[in-house]
Image 1 (spheres, rainbow, N blue to C red):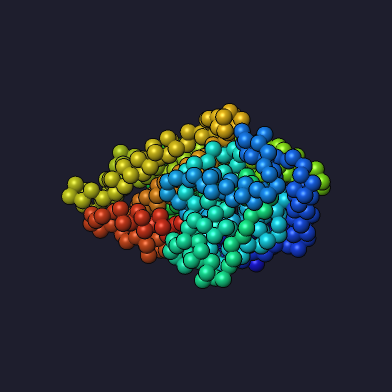
Image 2: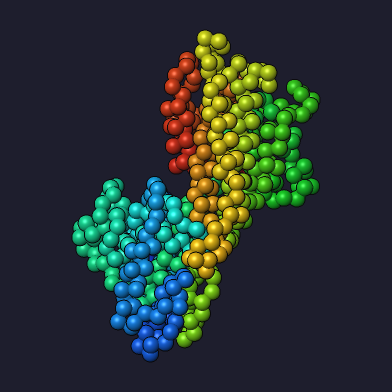
Length: 500
């Protein structure tokens, strides 16, 4: 079980909740802070003080006062009117992440909600009841209003949920699990939808998949080096230490470990003096990708533990601000888009070197019968198409802004678009890495798998359980999908023992 405090959630803990189905609970001390914050809201309502979001309208309607008897209706109307998401729903795992992050943010005790709101969010996570949330419709400032409104519908018993592998009406799932919907009190609707949890949840899932893919790409690149009889000298520790980037140094170290005792690698001057950049510069390129991922992880960790709604309550003072603005995550997601796109770009160049007979000593297109059988020719086409699509998706979303709410909200982050595109780039990149893996396995067979390093050979043997040797042409789309699906769920580098 992962204990939520409002300030100690990490990417690693979130990964356990999402991918290991860990349950969660809210720490008692944090719930006490939540109660104190909610008491401030109650006092404001009883004293008929005018405070934004509690007894006023929202956005451009912030100067419209709401009668004390209508503050509940105000919150309900807010949720229903703002549930304007469109398009395909977020993956269910992202919806689960949004529930966790929303509960953790409210636990900080600055939002003025009752403990029952957080307790219900926790219960929904633990019972695997996840909201169906359309992906499109958020500007990423005033928070993720549309997506989080669809999340809030779940708490009041409306909308649809993922439950037991199906999409069903929320109340049907509630009846089966004997859960009662919540009647929202003052400020609770606003507190639920004013935040960055959609972009942060999507970004965290994209990051976790990108991190796994980056590690896998190093091992698969090592196998490509064997298939192309690459020069190991370029990975010498001295070279990378004198530049000084720790991520580059670590990547080179892992590749040296993967290729330890390989009889397929070469040394400078043995077959050629230097390799092409897509081989020689793997640590420099992937090291830079790791630098970007480290930055992204830092920003996500901060945001997962941040109070991002508005207004916020400090003791008895209620202050309006702009913590809902998603710019920090928008910039981080745009950075990750570029970093992962580059991971795929350099992989596609190695694929080209593996299939192009003018660039290697292997059979043309790794074909078992060149001419009669096309072999891996069109696998490279697919990889080229995917990296080209990624270049379009990598255009930064954060440099765009469109004013909303009658120009009251005149600068927005587009952070949720950035996070969605980042996830799509990761998915595309995984297909590219899968294609490189298929081609690398075929290449090393030509030289003899008994000559491979222990680590890469173990990886090869596992990969061959997923995709068979190319003995004749077949529908390779099935192979690409099977390999990509496998890579999505396997810690490939752990199959290779690289301990000293």
